[in-house]
Length: 400
Image (cartoon, rainbow, N blue to C red; front, side, top):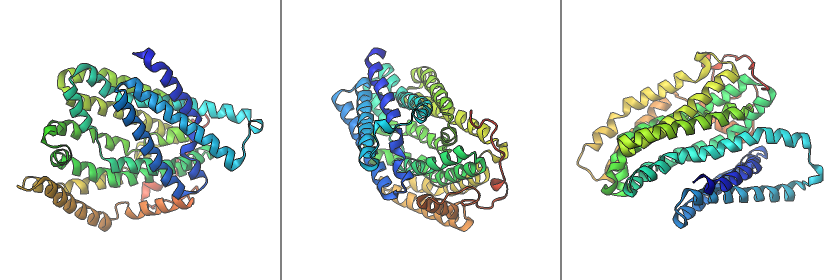
């Protein structure tokens, strides 16, 4: 098994490292429209290659080969772009900068490779331990909430270079403010939608995939809980401050947790066990990296995360959750349940968020400043909420 994936995984690592800057080059050039087109095109092309590999080969090795080929195309595209736009030549390269780049990106590329395996370890174990029908049920459950994935990808690509700038300058307070505002933006969408999709999971799955996949509802409800961990943007600070070796270790721990728990849970609880193993793997990765962020920025528990804003969003969202739950009990068509229940829930949520100003103005200011490239040290994105705007001491681990 390992011998069949060793070469494509090595190529995937190499090409991922070589093309890492491609994700951020349009941000550095302040070309927001080009960035949007790139993010959408990149994700569509990557998904198409994975789907084609899964259809043609149907094995883990074929999918990893497809990912390696896609990363290779990205590396070629980056070289062509740099040569045509900036006229870069090999004789102009800076050896010292090159080795600094390798030191930073090699653990990051290895972490990305392990992350790909970690995110699919539950499905690999399912295919080995259970039947094809169970695998199909789990694949439906893993559909997630695509709009939240798109939010994370789009905003994360814009935020990370700014955090890296603060990390390079040792601006811990500015980095923390930007990180917290990113979490608030994620939470503002993630928490209400996770609660809504938990309430309407049955009608959504059965409408999209028919009643034959009703057994996908339980693992689906478990898997969408991973968004509550992912919304913490846990890799932003460790990567932005150059702690890529820790990111690698964290991803490795996540893989080990997913594999160990997966074997035990899948054999006892079938696809629901696989879902809980996937949730545990994401949680281990998230907890390790946000704890590292606390250490890097020198934060107290109170300063660690935007606790008050996240709790307020959660309380309001939970208070409104009976609306879709009650409508789902009515004898209506599934589409009507989703439209009426979801529409009423989101309308009330939006009104309450605006009434209590639960981050809506701050998030709009953050997005505007990011796209205009105006995030600076200090309070360009501050909201003046007491403890969430306090100064943070410079990290003792800086430059590690």
